[in-house]
Amino acid sequence: MSPIILLTCIALYFLILLGVAMYTARGSNNETFFIGNKNSHWMLVAFGMIGTSLSGVTFVSVPGTVGFNQFTYFQVVIGYFIGYFVVAYVLLPLYYRLQLTSIYHYLQHRFGIKSYKTGALFFIASRTLGATLRLYLVINVMQLFILDAFGVPFAATALLILIMILLYTFKGGVKTIVWTDTLQTFFMLLALVVCVGYIMNDLGLSVSETINQLQQSGYSTMLVTDAWDKRFFIKQIVGGAFITISMTGLDQEMMQKNISVKKLGDSQKNMLTFSSVMVLVNLLFLLLGGLLYLYASNKGLLVKGDDLFPTIALQYLPPTISLIFIIGLISALFPSADGAITALTSSFCIDILGLQRNKTLSENQQSKIRMRVHLTFAVVFLLFVLYFKWLDNKSIIGILLDIAGYTYGPLLGLFAFGILTKRHLNDDAAPWICLASPIICYWFQQQSANLLSGYQFGIEMLIVNGLLTFTGLWAISKKATT
Image 1 (cartoon, rainbow, N blue to C red):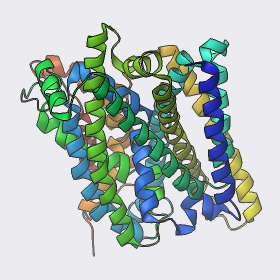
Image 2: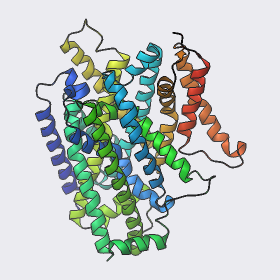
Image 3: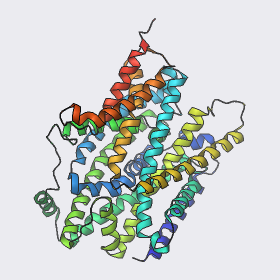
Image 4: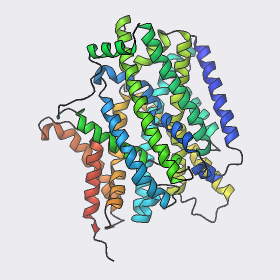
């Protein structure tokens, strides 16, 4: 398909998002930006969160991994499903009971100001790295298959995309994102279903024949029973559960949307509905991955990994399907960054600058500070996207899970210590424990094969990191007195 048509499609899509933003941002203030005035409908939040959780990594990278890891990623998805129940019935009631705008205020309630700031800074670091990595993946696909044809440099593409995101999130914040994420999730799922249907039809396969072909090709393997393998099913399921608890339940971006729902019961319904749909959607992405590899084999294509889906969709499928793919791709792109920039702005303003507690600043003064922070994070995103382009790594989802293991581990340890114990923490020493834990884990992961007879740590490093943080916090705490 002509790059001009694809570029026009992207421009029209953005204008739709901008129109939604202008409508939803009417009469907005700082409370609107941070938590949507606690007036978001739970069904919209549930549907929109699918797009935020999937992002460009799932859209492009999960199908690409099927050639190397078969359907074993589904083991992690089962863990995700279990983790969502913990978020719904342990963490959400806590956040609503304390009426939090930033979930990291819990750490201040429980331990003190330094633990609170530490938790917020770990979120800011983790979400910045994770969101920019997701954003890079999709921008890179658009660059290779569309904008290179116009001679546009990668840096200009990244800058333009971030300006577009700024334009529709600058004022409305969470209230706008709840609606735009819903729209984007719809288009992403539409692209997924259409591509699966077309490839099955092109290969002349029914559903049962597709399953048989995948089994014969070895792509449909789901369970790994070798305990020494990084993909061992118990490690993947347990690790997946803790990833959900950490990357959803302890993440301001994800929880910011949930606590924008007025009632706890509705927020819990959102979480359970969302988790059920996520299982089915991830399974469908794995099915798509298997079909893409069958299609590539049938056509004699050698492309693999993250390049597989874009290459087939844009170079070998009919123009209409290519157009739908691009719509799905940009629908995966924007939720990767818009919610992250908004949540990072909220966390920095509330947790680090203490904007909501500053009674000396007017609403207008607070808005100006918030906008400057918002703009600063956009610049930070641009710099990280350019850095990832310079690295040019092809296995994005693996890097993303590694980042989560190191950066969310201290958050997991802090919240677990607060919820599961009643001990008093030495607040001054807590930041040092949280910094030391991921450093020790990194060293241990590098040496694990030598120290443990070939054992390789994978997704469970998040749990090890959390346990190490928990143990360190216990060591610097004392028994509570009446």
